[in-house]
Image 1 (tube, rainbow, N blue to C red):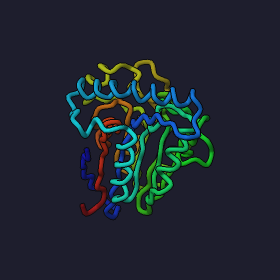
Image 2: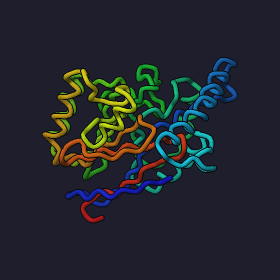
Image 3: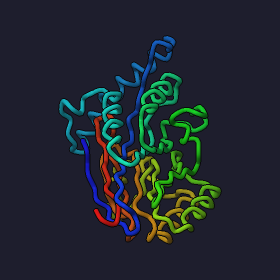
Length: 271
């Protein structure tokens, strides 16, 4: 399902940015050994009921379309995103890191013709992602995708933490004053979504009670530079949530790609 949003922002020519997360791909192929095959089948079977539970818990559809295999949804969303200017994959594209999963995403993304960014999720371990693979950007604590009159900044908060080095790098990037779209996996809790995120548990929050000071420092930094921040894209919840995390910055959490959810943003001065 495509969910469309319009974000007016001065100084940007019209851009179309797609965003999805939580595909939880669990693949095997002709090169897989028996253990890899068993792991993939188990992962697929486990998510076949977990994704249904998420939709039921949060009142989202679960009809024939949503029940298509995760792999089919992933391929359909890549095809749809070819219509845009760029794609953000906000974590948990893989259910776990394995060579069959890497081979599959390498093949699927090899034909994708638009700039894209993939940030690390809690199901992906950055150090295990092979250098040179299609998802190798997940290895970087901070990423920048240049789209000319705007940029996309990826932040690895997959362990629900950020480091001082990440904060220093983020500040340097934001000080440029360029319009910036931010992306990370674990969402920010705020007044508008606190009840739902508290119901999901602290594991689904970046700024949970007792979180490291660096997490709170990052949120203060976002508020400091909010005039140049277009929005924050996140994932992890397996349901959709759109909330203001500062007076000017809206956070868009896409519901699970496992059932075919993808966000489509029209961004620019004249949209």
